[in-house]
Amino acid sequence: MTTEKKKKSLLRRILKYTFRTIGIIILIFLVWSLIPLKQTIKPIEPRADTRYWSMKDGYKIAYTFIDGDTINSNHCIIFLHGGPGGYIHSAIINQMK
Image 1: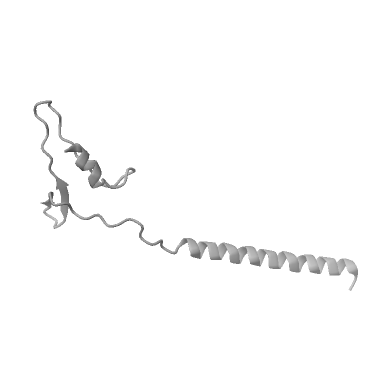
Image 2 (image 1 turned 45 degrees about the vertical axis):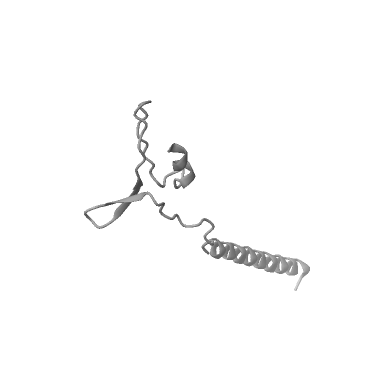
């Protein structure tokens, strides 16, 4: 074998193992990214003043009724869970009382 053939053979082996290594790293990263994370936020527990609206299909919607201030004509506020802002924490509702 000539030295040029040896160089080409060595280059092919280097490239082959480099691409295999990159492929294995990508595969490990993909598998690792699919592993679910541990829950970091405590589940939401209903407050003492939580009420439920039962729907005809069997599911329920939880709500909290807070009386408005009729002297200053403040209107009612409706908090909906989810969306871009996340869930509504009890501290936010307590500020409105």
